[in-house]
Length: 117
Image (cartoon, rainbow, N blue to C red):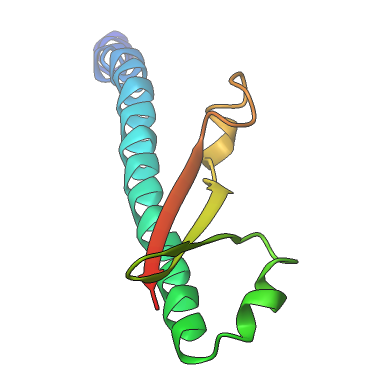
């Protein structure tokens, strides 16, 4: 009976250390996943801005409907034509509120597209 009691304590000796090693590993995994999500979010936002720029090249009447959305359109006349610059700034989704201690503008993606007519 005494040998059985000693062997069960030895089997559980490494469980606390293994649990403590799991915490930083999980945090590191979440941070890497956040970086992947931020990169993907930037690609998605850039494709949306380019889509809007292409659509306004095809149909210029759409610029008026864009002013009410979250796209910013700057238009200027140049010697070579009309230069339109499209801006969009969006907040990146954060896993579990990792960056809630920072300001609202700390985790944003700003993308730009330019078209010439």
